[in-house]
Image (cartoon, rainbow, N blue to C red):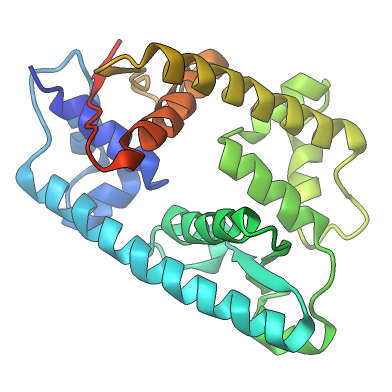
Length: 256
């Protein structure tokens, strides 16, 4: 039987969307969305929810094209492709931040496939958009680069802090553009690199075994996952994309 709950969760995760985004998008309570995603409850997502997610897929395509055009324009001006990375306060609540950052990530992947270097910069600095600072762009923005990489890998601040044996405040300072002197330490970059390697290994395992449906872990009612579950889910999404790249294979997801 098709797992509608898991399908919805996987689609949201694949678009970097949160239950809160869906709730705002179709004007329902967040608790209702969480019930739709909870495998222990006898209710499934409504049609409007799937329609909204489909609309976000189309919106992602438009955002990605816009992002690519901006990156090409920056390359013409500065000789380097610049990609924006957004933070919570940069966009109104009605705009799903994850979708915008995913567009930047997809463009970065496209450029990387062509051996073209690019840089992530925070979309907003000192409460002003980067367009107002073009005279001093592009510059290295290790805070934005670190934040982007952590988001791409789906690593929460608390997990980075725990892995390095430091406080979450320190990790937040590394990401905060207003804390100029607080930059990510070498061990932090190494931690993310190891995390990426772990996801890659798990993805390779799934590509070899080709399970269908693809196993997927449901979130707790607090919206959390363990490290192992998070890595499994990211690998499942990555593996499914590669398996479906031929345009013929269809991969479903099912909660485990």
